[in-house]
Image 1 (cartoon, rainbow, N blue to C red):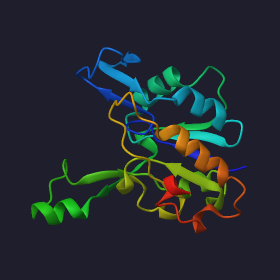
Image 2: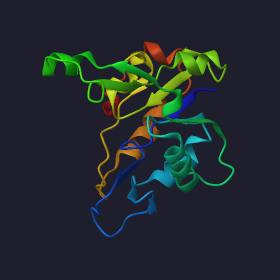
Image 3: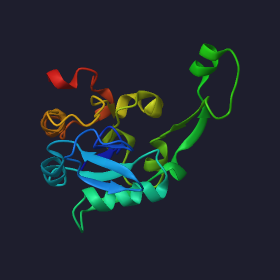
Length: 186
């Protein structure tokens, strides 16, 4: 069974210190959190076809709080990882743009899926990572699906499209061989 590794911020939810509109889903750490439309149906259906995990570059305590709010109790998550499982690296593109190195602005957290495979959760050929930020998945190109960034739009319909696509490829022998850049047009 394939493993789907889900990002949180701007993939499944949007958290902001200022309200976008009154219909926020919940609050965590002084953030107004908006669940992406169709999230509950997406998660409910996803577990019927895949193993599911969460990996965010946000702080571990924030990740735990968000997961507790958006996933039903006893949801079968393989793992929940936060920033402590990410790898901090120099973002050379920013250095080129600025012309100098600044530790606080030119570092980036990346998610290296070899860590997941090494822990025996799944083979790399059976892992898909869903993240709105390509630079966080730069070492996982063949495993990555990049949904449109979610910024709280209540008319967003990305998750039903994503679910249909994921189900359509669940029997593929090696997900790394699939062209996923135009996944919405499958």
